[in-house]
Length: 408
Image (cartoon, rainbow, N blue to C red):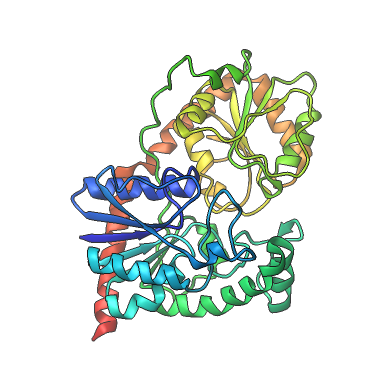
């Protein structure tokens, strides 16, 4: 099968979604499919033209050169409407690759839709977040989980999130949703929470297909100077972007309530205007995956205190694969990964007191940490490539049948 992935960013950009797309592409190529990726040019540098058996095409973007529409300086983002130059470059990629299936992963889809009827490829869309109907993609309104979209509500929220370009993004998202629902042959939400919050129903062909995890990367060179930044004594780990909706402030407050706790290490982008000032806490910034996994292996347990409905929680799955117990919020896709009292401890999102109590429980009970960690390792096998990748192949067949039926 000839498959074209559409992803706004790709390696060497580091991030959960980028790793998911890269691993899925490589696994499909290893199973005999012809796989290519089309991705936006990124400030982090050009990707390799071929990586792990997957051809990689880079795309220009007009919005990158318009100051009020450009991205965050570190990553370029596709807008929720067609970008003229991206459309032109995608037309070229389609001529070269002649895909049978186009598998989109984010708003880059909108630059493909003007070409969809002509290409005749089946169209699958993985929903990694809530961008189908939410302009900020996060379903957070005024610091709390959002009850759902509303015209003026979304415009104000997008303006708060993006600034001056927010209202245009909100309107484009609203109008684009209808077009996407008409053209996509199969939706692939990564969790039950995403399917529910994106309001997928009887009129939408969809299949929940979670992220998968293969073998964790081997230990990096022991003399890497960054490893020396980790505490020598046992420590608690939170990894991933550190920002308000990830519950970082709640974590710091809960940690401060613990009497003489082990050190707390934060790995990921620090996305607050103020610097970190918290006794016992070290923020190390973003690390390459191999180093972050090594920190994970050395940790006592991990914490994922999100207050937003986390679409999946890849960090929770990586924690499980490393045999580590986790304290996580009882929300969103984290519920699909963490079995409460079996592989980790679930607490109410934003409940600092319960978060502190769960952390104290794992600090004090080595046997509990070991039991939860062993069960987590077993649960991680349910998300192996051998189990999950065939589900994507089956979904592609469904999409192909739907497209053939539509074309008659």
